[in-house]
Figure (cartoon, each protein chain N blue to C red):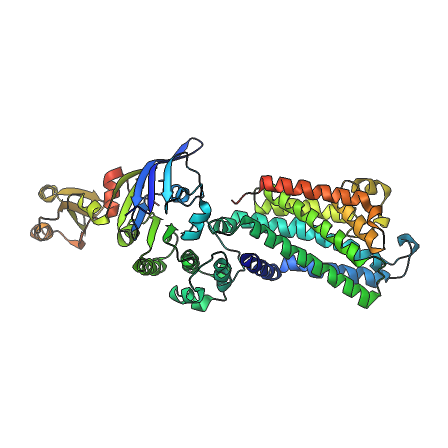
Length: 247
Length: 306
């Protein structure tokens, strides 16, 4: 327990010292919000079922943060820890590998949550963002989405031979997915053909779930999203256990 | 007293390459035991089998009374390891690394004191990536000492360090040994093994070709001594012949080496008076005592090349 706390604390500091990771988790989403907020404002629109751009962007950008921390942050950290021999050094101590992995999960979860919190606060204060959901449901949906994507990140880190390939593959998966899933900009603006493709992207389910819960949908309305994300989580954990390597 | 390390018939192959071939040795408590040999001799593979990082194909290993494969947790609690290939996160500060690693063990030395002992006090807030090679190694030694272990593994401790940093590390190892720790180290610097180790195993092609104290290994050469000097121009044939009677003669360009018996005290004076009598200009004359390097050369017929 002592080692988990210490490791989590140090990993959190290391995360914040890495400017690129901290930027994409904490700053970039805010910049997007202010950019599109200043262009479109937050006036209710029939396009978005009577809601404004900011109202629908906050849950979508939250999905974007989840995907970025998982597929880029987590993947690169784990792959480079393995490649550089950081895990190898840890392996010669009595510390459990579970502590090492858990510290990563906790830190990335907290940072992702912080990223979301910044969006919510900015949306509220600057654009009078509307929120009709149940905070507890949103939190549950957020946790499920995070865990599911962290599992994907661990799978990717386990499968990729080096930190460099993990980074390239992570980006190649991430960027198209950000735009096609409706995380980067509203799905309402995407053509029909792309919407069909988006059904095969895991991030689409996060966007749909979070946006739904945001406007007060019950979980029962999002049975399929929950099922898909749970499936990814279980499968991801199983595969990452199989593919985990110390070196 | 039971040996602290006991290796019997250790063998490890990677695909078709035999890395370690039937290695056996024992270590007693309080001893500094060194494995020396060129790259690829099997030193690191052997030490990593003992650390539990690699699984041997054959043979038995007992470290602190346990099998490293079966009881790695016990081993990790009671040994300190410095690995050849390992790292810390780039941006972790020196004190944070020590503080973090302290949390892994139920009982540790006070890392604040270790910082001072290892000369890292000024670097306590420096990120790992900004440390020099020697400072990184000192930090790794600190991490190895942290659990106050009975047994310490040091793998290629000074490889890639400049001579000054290497001497600083040697002094550290001396201090550690004064605390009564048992140390297993590998190196491909013969001088390092000679200076630090109580006993040395010379490895070549995965086998131990000799194992004894450095003094005895050197004595086994038969008390050879050599005179080395540089001449201007070519040595006349009759001089070569006369010198050949002192001992074995070796010519390399303008460098001349005579290998003689160390007990024959007159070797140096005989050589000088011969050169003077014949009026041959020479410089840089010196006598050299044999080293472990010579032992290796004699045993394998090859020079140690990095």
